[in-house]
Length: 149
Image (cartoon, rainbow, N blue to C red; front, side):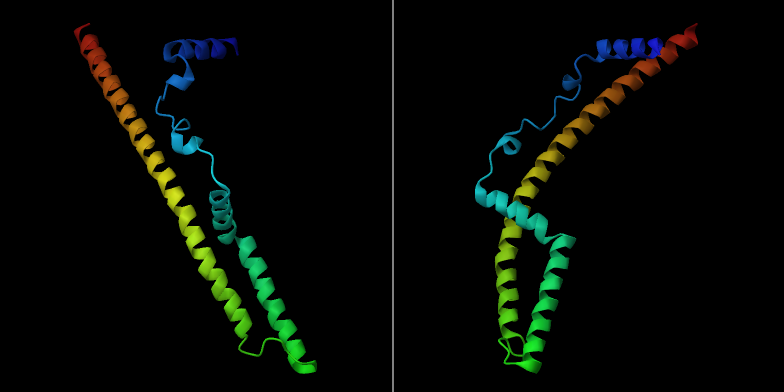
């Protein structure tokens, strides 16, 4: 166990501070540090909730309840939303009309974050490629030295 800890300490000495291993960490990017407005936070929540199974189940339950209540009133009493459910259609159209632009706003911000992530991933991949090439050169150098022995 002590040998493993010693080897970890040696690796840490060689590498140095782990936060400096990949200086392309993007958590400090201004886009990730900015404070979102209430509208932006609401749009993110609506986009997250509107695309979830919870939303689908709740909306399905609401629609079934609406139709059952209307059917009950149609049979026994006077109904408040006649059969083609015009009021329900108005509600669903309004929901779609408001939900779509809000989701698009949230997706726009997510696209910005994804572009930054891709940029940093590319930088990390380039750095890894440079390190691999350097290791390959060192390995070739070692092979040449071993052949001469």
